[in-house]
Every structure is written in structure tokens, then in C-alpha cells.
Image 1: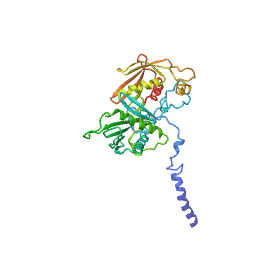
Image 2: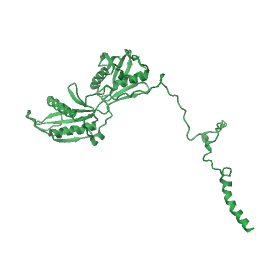
Image 3: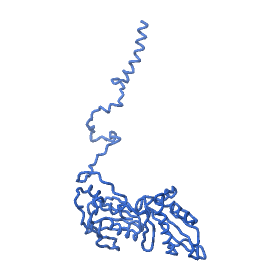
Image 4: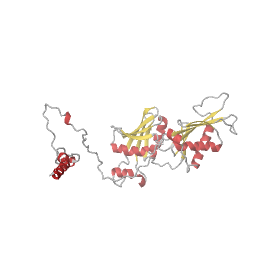
Length: 343
């Protein structure tokens, strides 16, 4: 009897756990029951009672229908960041008496190249400001000049992504030392120095180091972006009006447009889109509109507007021939091509 009572005492605690916490116990484990739980109708709450206490903690928002183009989808070939690919590593550009070198490297890569040019040329460096992109040389004398001279090199972000600009400022030493002038004292010396540096950059384009300090200080994202607003698609260009206008005219001529007329005072170009001239350039349009025939927009006329948002930022928009709003995807496609040709 004692042995039987001991066995009963041992078995009661063991079976008690199942009786309390088992699947059919008083306190079942409901951690995974949601997987098989049926969906029930919402609780019907009388109108005079509040439903705040039974609202879901994490409501699932309704899924909006996405607008699809009415064409069969085909993965497009990527649009290059710069449509004309700019085969030249270095190009000297000028506008209204100002000159600069356009270099197809990021500002952080151009910076050590300029330092390398000065070292190779035996020109001493007096001051450096990586954040502002400035390198000032020491005063030195040239063989054909009586007075000493010095130069300031300014590395700036290019219009397109991963491009840079190099500006040169020259100063002739007078009786008293003065601050840097707004324009070079000797334009001929400035031009010759810019040409020499540009030639050095072109010759060393294959081996381009990177300055970590300059790379952190100067952006390589470019000064041109394509953005969508609720009303339209537009290009934002971080340039003053004079240079932005010149860049827009040149870019439009290279972007499969023919300029029919222009009104600089109003900031408007009147242009006809002629379409891609080579088969390899039509990947974007083949995907967007489908088909392999002539481009459906070829021969269409447009107004290209350049409007100032601020002194140093312009907005480029596209309108129909009479100034009317055109289809959004038409804006996106044509402005994408235009963006890649503005430098």
C-alpha cells in the first residue's frame, strides 16, 4: 500500500502540468494558434459605444493600383549618365571671357593631379583650402616677365556627375600686396597656364589618384538633376543664367533637336525633335513607346524654357509648340536625353 501511494503521489505532479498547460488544459499555449485561426466578421458595436479600444494596433493600408504603361514591358538598356559620353578626357571651354577646363574625373581625383602638376613644374604652393577647392601658388618670376606672378587654381564640381572643372586666376605682383582680383591681371598668362595644366591632365588621365580630403569636401554628384513634381518633370541646373543658357543651347543641339528660333530675354528655345540618328541611341525610346519604326515624336516641335529659381539655380521645362502641357512620359523621355548633353 505504501508503494502504491508513492506511485500515485509521483504521477499526480507529472500529469498536473498537462492538465494545467496542455493543449486542452486550463491555460493552453496560444502562441501559434494564429496560423490556423479562422477569419471572423468584425465585431458589431452598438452605435452608442466607442470602438477605439478594438482598433488594430498595426492596420494594413489599402494597396493602391499602380499605373502601368499601355505597352508590353521590356527591360530597357540603361541611359548613360552623359549621353554624348564625352570621349575627350579634358576640354577647355570659354564663355564671355571666362575660361575653364572640363575634366572627366571627380573633383577628388582632379585635386591631386593639379598638385602633381605644380610639383612637376617646380612651382611652390603657398596655401591650400580643400573645402573651397583652392590651391594658391607662391610668387615666382617668369623669364619673359619683369614682375613676379602667382596663380590660384580652383577645382569645382562639374555639371555632369563625376566631372570636375578647373579655373585659373592670375595675379601680377605690384608695389603692395593686395587680395586676389576678380579677373586675371594678365589674360594671356592665364590662358597659357590653363593650357599647360590641361595638357598635363590629358597626359596623366590613365593614372588618376584620389585625394581623400578633397573627395570628402567636394561633391561628385554634379550640378544637374532630373526631378518630378506634381505638375511636371523638370531639370534643375545649378548654374547662373548666362552659362546655363549657353549650356542649354549647346546641349539641345546635341540631344537630337534642331533649334528653330530662340528668345534669350524670355529664356525660351523653339526646337524640333528629329529623333535618334543612330540605331544604338534608340534603346530608351524603343522601350518607352515600343516598335522599331521611326520615332513617333520625330518632327514634333517644342518650347524649352529656362527659368531662374535663384541667381545660381535654373529650372528647365518642356512645353508643346504653343506652350501647352505635354504628356508626362514625353517630358521624362526628352528631358532625360537633354540632361545627358548639358555640360
